[in-house]
Image (cartoon, rainbow, N blue to C red):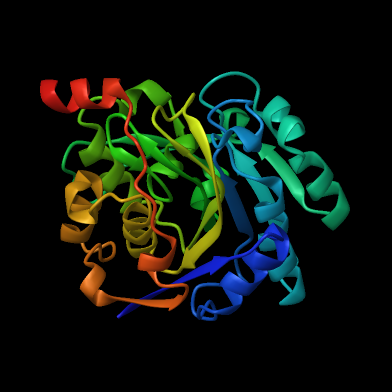
Length: 281
């Protein structure tokens, strides 16, 4: 069974370290590859809005890695709107990187390599940042809803590694699953400290004080969806990723450690536009 940790607390760095300590990461962390921490900075909104990844969760990931002796660590993102380094500064990630002596990279400025996902549903070719292809990936998304894909969590977060971003937005769910078959995160850490309901870039913030972590990103996303009151089976890209053998979105096949879903679940409100988009689809 896939194992996913849910930890609740008011000290995000330590909550993140604890969550990662509750899962088995030995088989996915390699000394041969650098570790790339991939947060979600779709824009430069402050994490308190519920839109972008909390730098304290990123610091928890970095602290966990450094405590395990991992030397080569990068934090990288390719923002969808605006300046990636501005987003780093607004969130305080630049200070985290300096404090722990880790690198920062704007993936939008990286070299790109064209790849062909195996057995594609829709994404026959994709240009992906070279650093991502050469790293062990830890995806650190925000816990939030999305108008077109129900939720936006660890595997959808990898869209920040693609150029151009607009190439993903037709057959979006199929392409998310295809992308995950090429750049599957080895570890997923969902920042649910301040989450977001409604619109993915301008929703309402919700204080949850949660971190969700695991080595099966599909399972982590399934648990994240359930915590937001969304059935994983209603999330098309998770169903497709499961069919492609990337992970499981069946809650019956996921072992939860830490807080049970029932204790932390909250029904997130969808935006009006998400209902319209589902109707048109």
